[in-house]
Length: 340
Ligand code: HEM
Image (cartoon, rainbow, N blue to C red; front, side, top):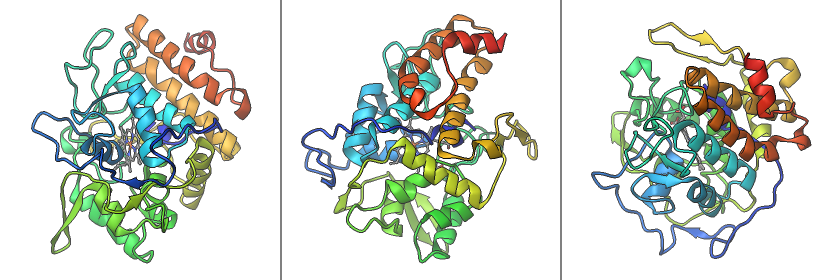
């Protein structure tokens, strides 16, 4: 559930597009050749991170860091600095180690220490990863396999694109019922080639590692950057993603929630995108509120851990979601007071 939300955030911080990765630079460059992951390399539910690791934009081992994630998102995909910080911060806070900034992009790993126990990595359920994934199973409906590519789901998404001139456009994504707001926008905003800006089958199947095997079936191959691919020219910021999420949401209004262990056991999340929140600012504040509300409920018996994590989240994210969007104050004192 948090994932539906986490993938959405804003602000216009200036973009640091450092040498030699100038906007629209041809990828993959000679420094980032594709290599299949080795037997001990970790991959997980995010095609964007898996492709980055398969090209060495982050460690090929799949154990990355906050700094590496922020840099890679700008260098490879031209994600805006604000959105890059938000995604990396939430990933490390919920699934990684806030002291070292380390994160496994898939299963838990002893290479990532934790405050009290080994963090779950991005495969961990209902932290960053949630139900409603585009091509991954719901956790409880697939015996905990919420991270591997599911060819049947990809085939359904492909069918939706076919109805839209073969493009994974905003309309195709809005009509695709397994909607992961935010990440869905990445298909038509971050994955297209900067030259034609089109979310074609060629680019989407390459980033998802989807290979057609005949009779309508799709198999998983390692995710890779398409050949002769340029990243988008302008940074994709939090404001941009909020605008897109609102568009997707309003096309088919849906309630947020998740499965709880049995088929047909979907429960509603108390935080919903009510009418008053259906603006760009409203969406951003809603996202931030949701990010902060996830932590204490998960580790409620461990007093020190949630406070340390909340501190980390607010220290990194308050400067981004702060006064410019008119979000209510998120100071730690206020969060703790509300929980009591
Ligand atoms: C620090 C940055 C990032 C983190 C921590 C992250 C993490 C995740 C996680 C945990 C999921 C699974 C969500 C779920 O299934 O509920 C996911 C899905 C996804 N991510 Fe990322 N991600 C990051 C950046 C990106 C970028 C830059 C892109 C695109 C260029 C991207 C594209 C996607 C897509 C398309 C999905 C949906 C996959 C599916 O459901 O089949 N991500 N990401």
